[in-house]
Length: 325
View 1 (cartoon, rainbow, N blue to C red):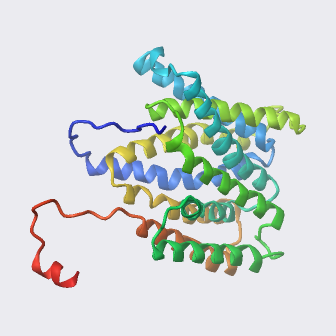
View 2: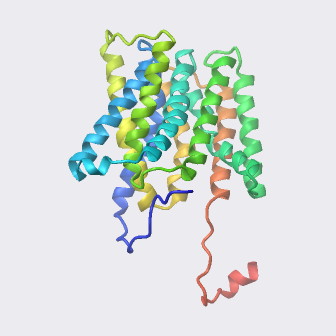
View 3: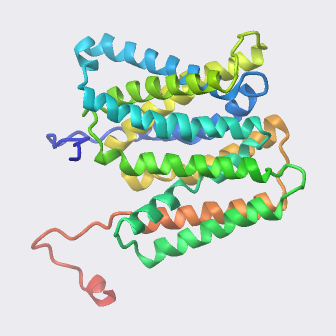
């Protein structure tokens, strides 16, 4: 049985354009910069335990904010809802984000990592097709083009400076698949109607799993790290896990989904630029060509999947539009 994220409400006043621009800017820049933050953090800190503590801290802080604004009753969930949030915590923070941290710990450049994760919308189309849906020809073309660009990005630059190793690439691609699976099944899970409450338990459960797996794997988070590492950790907690996601959820309710979805091909561009600017990650030919093809493919899929506005009943269709139909 599916949950209803946004029940019908009375018509809302359109938000001011400035608020939409600010929220969209946060999603564009902050989410694009998290790959850089992870790359810096795992230079000293173990990838899974540091990432797990990041999500646990963010979940607790967000839960405290919600409790202050709505009381502890706002955080009440049923066992089934908690199980659904825990599954999302496994698929998204643990397998999705956690394996990205491991991949970057293996030396994957932050910009290339973002380009590999950018194929999430393409995986969604693949899952829909396997599930019996019939995406349009343009969507399928975008998927084929995207995976071709991905193959060129990884294989053409193999062994060159700034390239990603094949094991790290495989791990990050698996992470993108897990993130896609979690995103695909989310509407089919029993979850709290308040998406912020879902996020609290998702981050706490996912972070806890990451810490436990990291400890079993032999990781030790000593805390004896440089200010640079702690700055990256704090940035990921506050801006990556709280500000950007809150902005994203707000946009889903206050802006066209076709506009919100553009983050999927803006984030990689931001990540590649910041990796070059701050970490001096080289921007090679395969990154420009393969990455450009991936971004173009994602843009094609998002455009093809954009809902088409239908004419209202009894609304006459202009003659010039009818002539082009």
